[in-house]
Image (cartoon, rainbow, N blue to C red; front, side, top):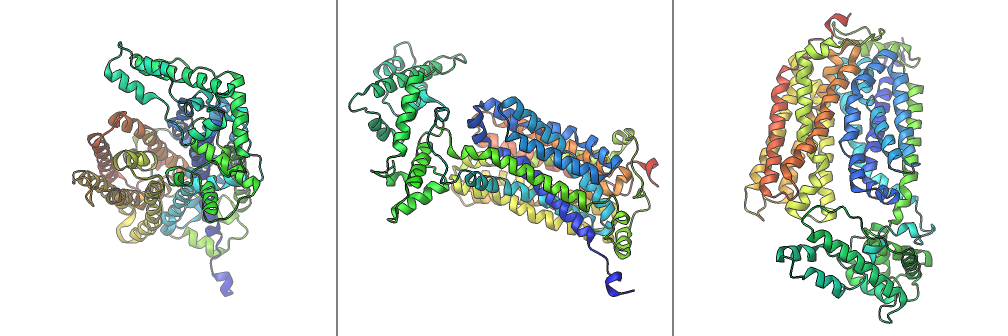
Length: 627
């Protein structure tokens, strides 16, 4: 036998690579909607309540409930066909989101993405159990999990890049009437407050508390207010300006009356006359062509404005003495107007979210094609797998493991409810996700409200724990596999999550300690808290591959179903966690409320760690189903 023939082929590595790529796509498609949310909201004219439904717990609820059925379908009919179907299905629904005309279609497409994505990880777990030797399963599982983290980290960066690409400099930047999202508020941000509004606020019938509340409700003037007023003929008292003042006064009176009314008032904002809206659009388009006097801004104001990167580059070019082309100047002015009126003028980049969704959808079809072409249900069916690789994959296979050639039949329901080990796995997943989901949902809010971290620095601090978590995931798989021959099957699968959950609890304990230090000290700083959050994220991912290995070891013919069962409970915890956070924090949280949230995270991880003592991969979940 030649040396090449005796060396194991590497098809198993390609299988794991495709699973990792699938995992990247899974999280990319899942979280791109969150980043594009503001643009979707503007484009479709959605309310904040509708956006909450779109991005809230409904996705995770449907995703959780579909875990076991989709895992069983893969166990029953095969991973090759089912994973291909799952990837194609969620990719088509992702692309469908780029074609919707309203909220109902968008919500249905989003929920269908959740349902069809549910089978991804359970199926991947089953594939690894058949294609990877026992001694390397945790490492392979860690790579797939790492793909998800990479996809989640890529989502905001790649989505932003593609949205800009799909709105090139040469594209038309003129403002259409549909781009005027709130004409009344726009008028209120460029016109001075009228005497009638002031008299309404200072009326004798109002208490000082109500007056203060009413004053705070008034719309903040835009930094372009003076330039806009001059453009619309404020000094000359033009008919356009008089109409703008009337619309502004009507908007202010509506705002003030809502704030003075002690009862909740759902009265809609007054409609601005169509003729006034048309004049506003004409005036704004005139400003876009303001290429004689240059861009419509004061260079000294640039550091104070939240401008997109492209606009900052234009400003830097002008500052250095460079000139802009006519199309670049119009685009710069459009971006400045959007920055000056973020809630009133639709964003230019909003035109790019639809093609981005379609591109992501088409990418998924290519991944599914790769899965269909390269996957086989088991190594002996793959023409490129040699005898040496087949023997390597079979090395160390458990005596209780199911025959790889057998397929699952009707799902036995009873073991799901009677297996103590499986319930311990579920309890760990619930506790882990309740403690972990804070880091991917409300961490940015914490940095804003408690430390007032600027936006760019805040973005880095929020991203850092995710990057550190990737390192934990990569190392965790190797750690679990290293422990297997040293401490046996049971403890190699249970000890890593036990240790890491208690470490994560310690991370929240560090947060409580830091919060008790003097304000402004090095320990009570966003950087100290970020270190604690990195420790939590690292610990969670360090022990996560053990749960995949547990399902592959104890699941028999139903690896996908067992992995899906645990994922279901974990995602229910992820859906329930933010509701607990909201209950603890309230509308205006202070130090005590945030500390309550940290206590919740600490308790959740301690609960998860204790529960994992009952995890035993040496005991098959379906004892009667094994061969």
